[in-house]
Length: 233
Image 1 (tube, rainbow, N blue to C red):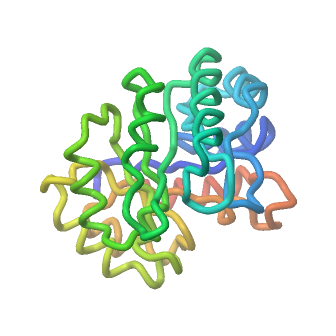
Image 2: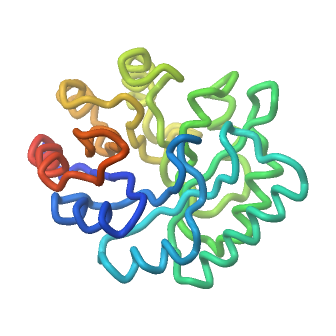
């Protein structure tokens, strides 16, 4: 328990980012439009946040609600977004795509990752909607996908309460093929979940709504983030 855990906070704008860093966040996930569960932010928003804080930023690459990559034209636009964000200085990303049958859309993932120049990235909660989590992890591990170092997951589509047994089972497989990336727990995560997750060796935690006690219509609360940072010390 002595190893410091990673605390990642969702930020929508500069105000969120500054408050999250002040509260002790280690990293930010940058998104826009939480009504669609987080889409790619404008290049200008990334630049403004990058100028305002000095902690790592992971930028969402997602153009529409849901977990499909979309049409060929949609994928081209996403690649263009990635290219523009890289040109602006983005060095870490978040992405993940599924086919209609719940299998990983490996072609779309490969297409986008090819634009990232080896940057580190998270495969996000699409894993929680996958038909077979183990198959998804192993399929991604078998591809030449540089930079995949994290899975953002609640263990189940319904959130951490539902997914806790899966998270503990996956933590126990750490280091096995497909299970090398860090588990970053997010999605209905509560402070009460932390003791059992930390005891299982999980050291990555992701919060959005929990950093906003007044709701998504209000900015991140530095005090709320500090409560999480203290709980993870």
